[in-house]
Each structure stands twice: as C-alpha cells, then as structure tokens.
Length: 369
Image 1 (cartoon, rainbow, N blue to C red):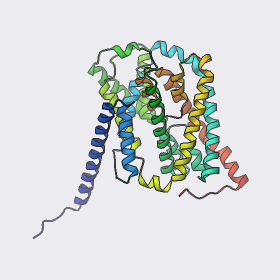
Image 2 (image 1 turned 180 degrees about the vertical axis):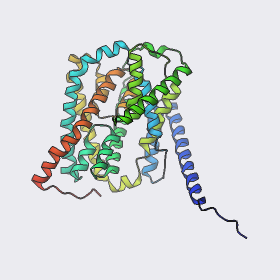
Image 3 (image 1 turned 90 degrees about the vertical axis):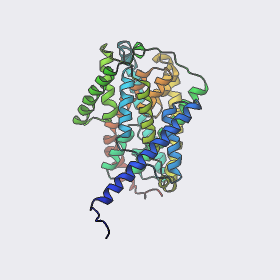
Image 4 (image 1 turned 90 degrees about the horizontal axis):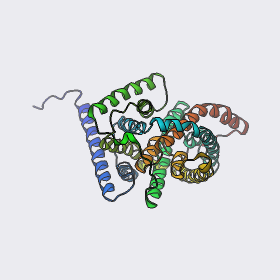
C-alpha cells in the first residue's frame, strides 16, 4: 500500500529546489570571488561573481538568488560608504554643489540622446528606451517602467548591462595605471567593535524603515547611508566597518546583477544590448570630457570626478572609490543627488515630452525581438 502524500508535498519540494538553486548560486559566487582575489583583479568580491554568473546565465544555466540578497548587500555598502562622511568631508561638499548641478544637466542631455538613439537606430519602443537610458537608480527606473506598462524586464536588464560595462571598464583602467588615490580617513583607523557594528545595523534598520514609510527611493542603500553618514558627520564613531561585511556586500550586489543576464535576454534583445553598450560607451566619453573640464575649478582629483560622473550606480562607484582610496563622500553625493534629480524629473519628462512627441509624430514601434 502506497503511503499517503500530503497535499503540500509538492510545495515543500519546490521550496527545497529553490534553496538548492540559491545555495548553488552563492557557492559559485564565492568561488568566483576567491579566484578573482587570487588573480588580483579589481573589486574581486563584486566583479568575480558578476561576470561568472552573467556568463553562466547567458549560456542558459538557470541561477537564482533570494530577492532581498542585493538589498542586504546595498545595506552593508551604504553603511561602509557613510562612515567616510567626516565633519571635514561634509564641510567640503557645499563647494561641489554647482558642479553637481551641471552634472544633472549633462545627465538630462544624455537621457534625451540615449532615448533618441535607442529608438531611432535600434528600434526600441520610445518609452522603454526612455527608462533604459535614464541614469537614475536601476531599481527605480524598473519600477517606473512597470508602473507605465513598459517592458520592465528589458529595462532592468539594460541597467544591469550598463553597470556591468562600467565595472568592467573603470576599475580595470584604474588598476592598470596603479592606485591613484592617497586620501586617508581617521574613522577608517578605528578598531572593530562588534557592539558598534550591531548599533550601526540597528540604526540602519530604522533608516530603511523611515525611507520606506516616506516612500523615498532605494531605501536599502540610502537609508543606511544617511544614518551612518549623519552619525559620522556629528563625530559619532563607534567602529570601522569590517572588511568581511564589506566583501559580503559586494558579493551580494554582484550576484544580484549577474543573475539578471539570461539566455532569453541575449537571444531576444540583441538590439537593446548593442544599443545600450554603445550608449554606455558614449556616456563614458562624455563623462571623461566633463570631468576634465571641471577638474581645475572643482579642485577634485580627476579619478574621483570620473567615478562621480560616469553612468554607474552609487553603491558600485562608491565602493570603487573606497577601494582605490579616492574621495568617497564626493562620489557618493554626486551620485545620490544626480539619482534624485533624474528620478524626480523622469515623470515630468515622461509625460510632458514623450507624450507630446508620440502624439505629434504618431510614434508606435513594436517591442524588440
């Protein structure tokens, strides 16, 4: 007589398979990071998992990770970056505001150019091209695309590809030409206090909750960043952030980006991938020229300006600045304010400009294949 099966057995089996996929993904990620570290590659704990998982996913190997994994990584890096906001560093931020304003204008010009280029030459639907070109937070642009019934999956993949390209180019160039930075921060020489780490995590959870309640963008990154930066700016220094937690944060972000590259994206969105690649490279050239133009009047080193103005993510560029001993607060503020500007202006631009263009020229294009 066969044993009776519980009606929820198939759910339990499905849950077990998900856990196995998660475990396999993280084992591959850890091994990739370890090998990358042995090879002395830049940002090994982020780039190792990112490139290996992206390659495996593009070959059709199904890999999964917990939805909140990347959020946990952002929380760790947000705290680590916030600890660089010493009173002296905060006092210098006001001097950078005019150049940040110009960077926001440049981002808007790039948004218009990228939208037009992806639509005109790569036949991407105009609205999808808009959200794929915006240099705001990747998650925020994906949410906006979904809200306006656009291809959120393509938008997410486009931003992931942009970050992958930036991380492949910029840290590699910096490492090839030697470590350029020599900035030193007193808070980084504090001893590790596990009670201090616990307090930072507790306060960061309050920051995350506050950002969620106020519906502010990127709560898992900016909430902890605001808390740790605020404490450090007022001279509250409990601990330095353990290297192990920083590495874990990089790994979780690398995994979160890497698993977005699937065979379906490579096969069915070739035009979008090619277009985003060209757009990203052109945006990097514009960022380099802009950095050279404002280097002297801003007083910032060219390497920090490059990280501040390239179309990368704040957490990724912030941790790059940290690893290369560059001006972490300046890089973080540039990206945070630019991201806020793009997110706040995206809705206005979307309705007032794209809507009128579509009505005037009757723009309707099929989804990319």
